[in-house]
Length: 177
Image (cartoon, rainbow, N blue to C red; front, side):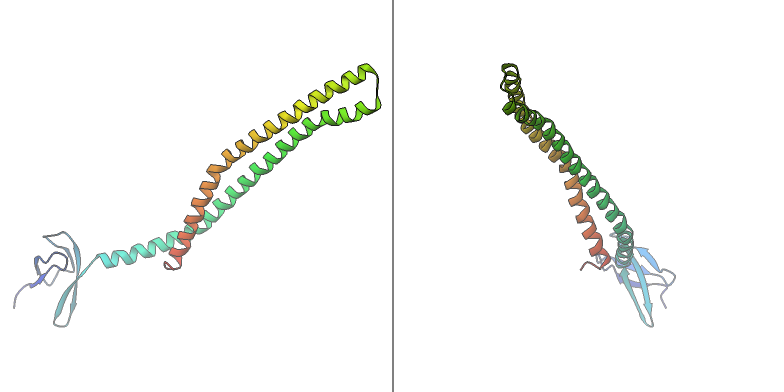
């Protein structure tokens, strides 16, 4: 009886000699790892890759299960930060509007009731300042809106990426469905 069994590598077709004590080995021709399977009267080779793929799938699933709560928390934090920026923007624009419209309100209150030259001149001055303030309000408001959009852009991109990661993690946990 021979001390080895002759087989061919399932990966490259190279000639192999398997001794009774070998349970796992790498092919001398291609370097692929194989597990020796023995049954009564039969010796066969199975690539280790299948086992590694199953382990990898299990590890990926466990990692995804752990990642889901973290990703959800990060999404909540980003959404809260985004809401804060929008709220701050609304307050700033409101303050600009209040400041700008104050002159117009003062003018509207003073002008109709006083016909004296000094108050009329003061009223006209207030009207000019009010008009300039409203024009300035529009300019500042537009700039503030642009600034807010610039601040939100990276947050929105990050939120989109995080939502995609969450969807991928959920698919991985569900077995790729």
